[in-house]
Length: 278
Image (tube, rainbow, N blue to C red):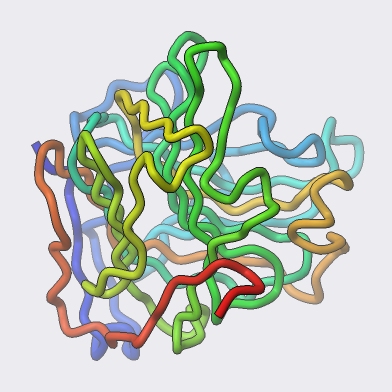
């Protein structure tokens, strides 16, 4: 079963209109939900000690799109910053995960993520596939893959940040919406942007040749790094304006391989490379 995927063409992006059909079917913890529902996270962020996920930071715009809002928390809050995250109710082990989004006007120390993550976060070996906009540059995006060895060691495509995999987009992702997709099979992962393959990886690209996959959900989030992550994303300080990401659509297609892009959004001449490489 595929999750609801509301496609909005480039002309629609330039107009303001009212919609009573939300892009995503949102719900909160302990509420009933549909198979195509998206949970609004409501707990301390695991990846950053300075951030709390709150449902109020996931909001509906008048055009039906979903917005994630990163801002300073009210005085007296447990953590100094608050933001929004959504995750799909539907999970899959193989198939295609897709997101049509417009990034915020990013800021040093901010991260906007489109990714899959293991469904059983407590007991399942780590598996994760990422698009990540890191820091202030919205003309590039990082790809990464996280897996776990039989001994429990976590390994990553980017070799723990030493060999970053970067895509030069050929556009500014904060100016318009674009479609990002990850296809995962038993043997490899294929990353698409606006229907074009920008990266293809298998066990041969992972440290130790590992390729272990398992059930995964889809996630979209916007967050600020803690001090020990500043070497990766930059030093986070309060930006001059609230950071807001727009979600125009998202899908999970279990067992379906390849891009479903074809809505008339601008295509790019993206290419993947290792940082510092040719």
